[in-house]
Length: 258
Ligand code: ADP
Image (cartoon, rainbow, N blue to C red; front, top):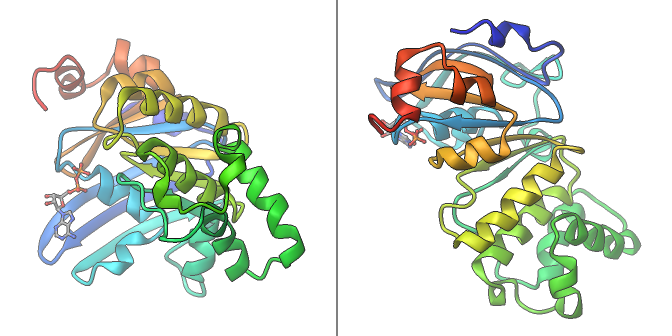
């Protein structure tokens, strides 16, 4: 493990000795990482190395999988998210998630975004402003402001993904987790999402799983390389790509396997 991992001062997310099993199969082995605030951190590594499993630990999405067992500690702003008294619904409001396949609800664009604030008891008169702000922040407003009552499913795939990002932002998270958000999108839609992610780090801490190394190099400040359930190396993206400390990182980023 590189020095850089210890050098992240005041991390927003801190993971200590995390181990995870699906039944008796261990999928994450002793992962330690400190993720800084207002930055983009990318998780890379070959298929099946545990990237998605790990990102799902950061807002307890793996709780939904019956066979899954987690040991270790994940702290967000100093609070153990697996500790007693944690409300998982509140936790997922604080730490939102955007998935690989855009998954708008079968309702209007407006209602998709208003859905979360409504559940959390936001006053009806404030909803319009929240919806507009979220659509502007996800760079969608100019494209669709004249049809926010249209079905969300009438949008293109790339627009649907930006809508999902807007929906996540509408409940005011601090951290947004992206699990391969562009892998179902064309290159133009991908470029828009990448630009959006880079802008969002002003206001949010971003963690992204990507199988696309160029994407990690383009948009992330920090990169974590996983291999067979282990975090092999973590550091500034430039250092990982230009001067990796571990041989297996170098082999992966130079395309020797993957
Ligand atoms: P990656 O995101 O790097 O492709 P995953 O986190 O999806 O890797 O998978 C890591 C390992 O855990 C793989 O061996 C995969 O088959 C296994 N795995 C993932 N999800 C489940 C699940 N719900 N049940 C059982 N095994 C799983």
